[in-house]
Every structure is written in structure tokens, then in C-alpha cells.
Image (cartoon, rainbow, N blue to C red; front, side, top):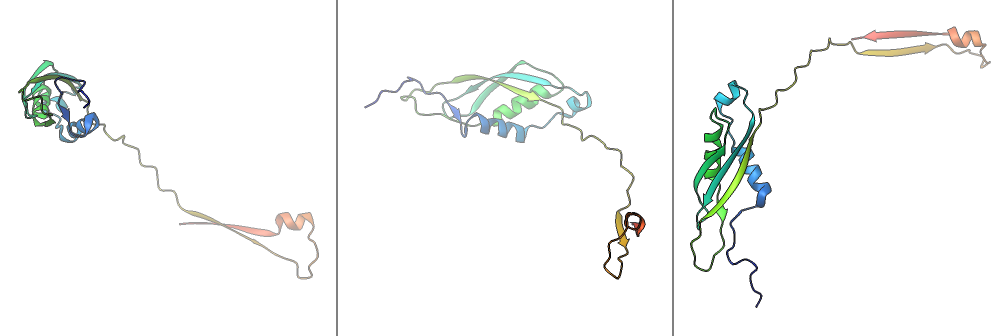
Length: 150
């Protein structure tokens, strides 16, 4: 029987770090006060995970204010981890996380270009009835061009 490498197994978010980032991105609500003050930055949190996989404590180590710290704590408390059995020992795990607050990108306003009319070009050339070759003068000036705009 193979021995376990770790005596105490660590909790993991279901789906891995990519799934955790997706969950945070989906559930993050930018605080209104931070939006009006145009605050951007990163909140660093320290949180604890109990033996059942629940986040039981979260504290901001370095915050931004304007409601961002509270929003980050609210988000971390929503996380649910998978904790493997640790030989019957109920262990409290401590982790750090950085939650980034970036202002939503405003779509660039483009000046409307004036509507260009659609143009079609139509050229009519006359052919000689007897099948003879035309002279270069006749070829160059022997037709009409129409420009039709809608």
C-alpha cells in the first residue's frame, strides 16, 4: 500500500483555481461608492476554512475602502471547499487570496460617420455590327459610364 505524501491533506476549491476565479468574477458586485469615486486596486484577504469546507473567518489585510473590502469578504464567505478526510482530525486551514477590483470598461463612443450612398457603376459600350476591330479612339471613347447613388 502506497503511503500518502502529506500527513494532512489541504482543502481545494471544486474545479480548481480557474473555477474559483470564474466564480469570483461572476459574483463580484462593484460597490457603488467605489464606482462613483473611480477606485481600482486589489484587496488582500486572510481567511480560514473549517473541516467541512466552509469559510468561517475572513479579514482584509490590505484594503481599498469605499466598500471594496466588505464586498471581497462577502465573496470569500460564499466559497465552498472540498476537504478530504484527515485521519479523523478536525483541522482549521488558513489561506490568503487577492481579489482585484477593475473598473468596467466603458465602450468607446464612436462619432457616427455620415451615411454614404451606395454606388453602382454601370458601363455601356457599343460594338460594331460588322465584327471589325475598333480603333484605339473608338475603344477609349466608345462607351458611357453611369453612377447610380441610393
